[in-house]
Image (tube, rainbow, N blue to C red; front, side):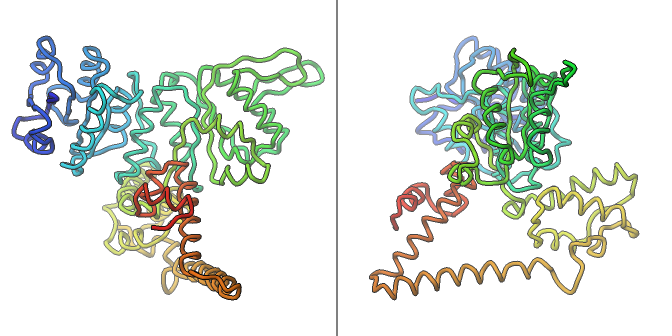
Length: 465
């Protein structure tokens, strides 16, 4: 029987955590004093620790460090009464096996315990070294939906490594902020973080920006890779880089070296590369516009940021976050938002994602005259009705037209099982698109479609249930 130690603020509060662990599978000991908890390690060691993030006598991060100093490979599950991006990132960076919102109990903790104690009971994720990192100001990654909590946890894990990262998501979802969070929570945080946007520079200028330049007189200027030595280079819109520039980026990733312009010598750098795109690199590879070897070099770890419309519970939370920031920046006395504004914010599809929401709140704060944000303060809500409603019909019409066309084609050809053929094809396409959008993560793709992972795999093979 596995031994589980629980450290909570009080033994009474720990009862909820105890109830989440089946008594027949685990022997559970409960602690409320961090000092006594650590002293007990001298006599025995548990197989799993469950740590409440809100303990009073010692911060959870400090406890994580102390426990890891005693037993590095001991899995620790952190349970948070009130989830936060900071808490998730720090917990994972310090070595937690998992970080769970308390509302996921009991199933979440039972599942985490089972996974943590699988095999020999010492299977843990490759995660973090200590270090500060304040991401509270990184507005676009604020969020409490399960999808954002998973991203916060992933940031904490990535901060402890030098792995290349590919961040995917629509414009305005906060890709650069994710990259910054990874950098400033890593051991490279005291070195430069430099960003380059491939879409705003012609190819020659982009090459000079990344790799440096030289003049006819022998003068040389260092590019971003040399300027950011020991730090991080964030390459946004990497899909816009030309194939020759992609080849030079690949050289940096493979060997840490590149040729300086008009020079025989090579520059050697130690940089972490984080890249981002809002386009399908898989499709660009098929079209010959993106190098396959660069794709797999970048995609050591892939982070997919869901669009704001797919995480509606975060909209009001983000709006309030941006409202407080805008009030402070503009020195405005605003009490809050009217219920009508909250409803409209939740209904609007936010094609510009978090960036559009932030700008909308800033405008509303600047123009408000009543002390409470109202619908008339937002230009996106102007008109007789929500303008976004008009954008749905063409999409639906195109889909219906495609289905009718496919039906006529198969029916004319005398095909049998027309329904199964068309439905199977649609399901396969949906599965491929969901997988692409989830950065190749089958679990996320299945969740996006609302199906099981096994069903997703069958659809990818062209089979129906």
